[in-house]
Amino acid sequence: MAAAPDSLLYLGLDFSTQQLKVVAIDENLSVVYQNSVQFDSKLPEFRTQGGVHIHADRLTVTSPVLMWVKALDELLDEMKRTGFDLSRVRALSGSGQQHGSVFWKTGASQTLKQLNPDQTLNQLLQDSFAVKDSPVWMDSSSRQQCQDLEAAVGGALRLAEITGSRAYERFTGSQISKLRQIRVQDFLDTERISLVSSFAASLFLGGYAAIDSSDGSGMNLLDIGTRNWSEICLEATAPHLDRLLGAPVPSTSVLGPVSSYFVHRYGFSEGCRVVAFTGDNPASLAGMRLHQGDIAVSLGTSDTVFLWIQQPRPALEGHVFCNPVDQEAYMALLCFKNGSLTRERVRNQSAGGSWELFSAALRDTPLGNNGNIGFYFDTMEITPSAVGVHRFDSNNSEVSSLSPEVEVRALVEGQFLSRRLHAERLGYSIIPGTRVLATGGASSNKEILQVLSDVFNAPVYTIDLSNSACLGSAYRALHGLVAESGVSFFDSVKKAPEPQLMATPHPTAKQVYDQMLTRFAQLEERVLQKTSSHQISCG
Image (cartoon, one colour):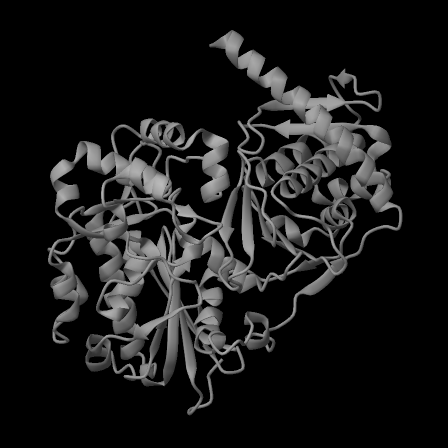
């Protein structure tokens, strides 16, 4: 769809794991342009697979910083070549894969200020990084540093209370600590540490961009209560770390005008503003336009749950981030590894490989499944940390099998009871007006969505989320210009298309599932004890 020739545009970029994407929207929030640069195919000289390098130890996973830089060159060159009028862009923002870190080399700030528009960013920034390959979210090589950080602050739960998460190997704090310990000179050569998001914003600003509080809360370094760096976490990670990180800013902040490099090379307007970039998960929350009390459930290979919450209760599982569109609120994120692949296995075994028969089984079995409950962890689950298939009858006795129809409902109810239980433990509660926003492959199955609606006792809507982080970044660019004058995010994006209502809860759903959730929590504890004792005996 083309924008009116004189309408102002807002740009959203997403530096994801496998590609760089861009979306442009007009003042009516209509998408008028989309494009992407796939790293593996478009930039083969970097020799990535899925956008990353997996090292020999299989634990270390990195991406070349200059690949991201060159991808931006390619993307903007393509936009200019095809006649996209960048002078109409009033503001831009973006997102980056969470937890990735960029280590700028001493002198890089001067280079950023003096970029020559006759050359590409890739040419100009060749020597600007102390670390050529950035650790990314798939990296799991910093276990010792995680243990050290938790010990320094008084344990895993205390760290979660401060930063929103217990120590995770992919999080930036432990990655910084590891670099300081094993690559001493590279750390000494570092002038500034960015997240992927703030690194990308720095390119557009022509100077170091501040880390926003929402992406910053995925580092194990930010105090989510004060939205400032935690002194105890900084001291446990590296000396004078606050100088290398700079001060965090609210996610709605306008960081400044676009650099003159982009004005002269690509025709951006001098008045184009750069709004703080954030992480891809927070940007997706903006793209989904999640409201207070809403919950988003992505039903994919893994199931992911996003929550808008006011009063978080950080725990040993899941993550709490500062909310990217409301400075007083928070967002929570839970990931469940056993999603669609487990649903497909049960479909194959109990419904003859047919989604129609699978759906019929859900229609033909009662809410609450006559008290039968199942836990289906084909692979070691993240939330909770358990494995195996565990079935219980209405007397809480473990059984070895269930009839095919009961098995199908036990699986789907069990998955959604788990999503609700762990969401409530992070601070979620069902309030009047609560909506469940469903996306991902399984959101096309109405019977699955009906169970989701019943378990959460809330209406379920579907949304098209093919580019949620990108779209959320464009929305945030538009909102950033009016946020300081008190305009809410939702007022600024009210013209966006509404999600579609797909299911409403059965009248008896609340009574059935409130009781069932209490049993489910008790049985999950039994499953956890069984799993851990089995691991000890097998150790």
